[in-house]
Amino acid sequence: MTNLLLILFIIGSYLFGSIATAIIVSKLMNLPDPRTHGSGNPGATNVLRSGSKIAALLTLIGDSLKGLLPVILAKFWDISITGQALIALAAFLGHLYPIFFNFRGGKGVATALGVLFGLSLFLGLAVAATWLIIFIISRISSLSALTATLLAPFYAWLINLQMQIIIAVLVIAIFIFWRHQSNIRKLLMRQEP
Image (cartoon, rainbow, N blue to C red; front, side, top):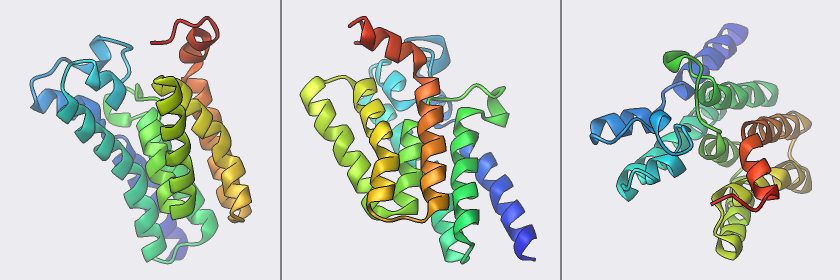
């Protein structure tokens, strides 16, 4: 039964992560589909470009909850650390590659943050604080996200989390950097808004 529960959790987490908050919020608020303007990314930053701070905030909250809730529920059901790491990755990958939206998802920053808070409050706080500090200094969202992401595995190691969690955080970081290739190029050319 434990293995079946874990499999159901992983599938459910992926499906939950596949709910594209940005697209749903934009549709409900009669805003343009975020995939058709700005960066084309269905995430909070691109929704903000439509001019609605409320829509962007709702997207941010929704995307974060997609990462947070599956991990919290896994802990509640006393699923193993390895299982929690797999569930965290499933929710995150659901956001990146959503089955409901032709596997074209967002860059994963908000969902990753939710996952990190679910795995460890201290890890989530450290990453969020890093994002905020870098954003206050630079005013560049992608630079803040990439810096916080780069440090996330180190923070996980520093606060002595289990190796399965550290590996999951490292995998998440690699995917976020992969999804931010265009942003990294723009940052290097000093063209990132």
